[in-house]
Length: 204
Image (cartoon, rainbow, N blue to C red):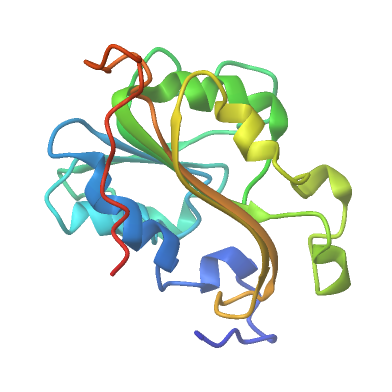
């Protein structure tokens, strides 16, 4: 577990630099083509996984201080944007091979996030869920996923590869999390049953 330093004035999610194992595990499912979108990126710890693999990555956050080092990186695009101001997000109209969301929840953004995943692309999402109030912030239910909420968000458009909801002690911030990896390929079936193709679980 990566230690956090309580006297550090840097926002908590910016102080965590090690990628979540959930994102590392499913990164290979993004395929080899298309850009990557890291939403509410913090210090870009998950988008950087893809940069290291030679991918084009768009980093979006209200505070981009922690990704200033990427502004001269040819494969990186850093966008400063308030995703909660009621306007269209800066990635509206574009599609990506992977959309990454970690430790961030703003429900009105769900439709835009789902639309941003291109055909055959993946959504990898992990954030805090109800019950986390026993452990630490966030405690506000507006910022905590309900049981099964990510499943409902992708229903009918994505094939769910993996989903978890429960207590984690392995993340840098222990608590109750919900996470999903889903692929937008429900229309890609060649079977008479209409079932989408299976994908590797990357169990490690």
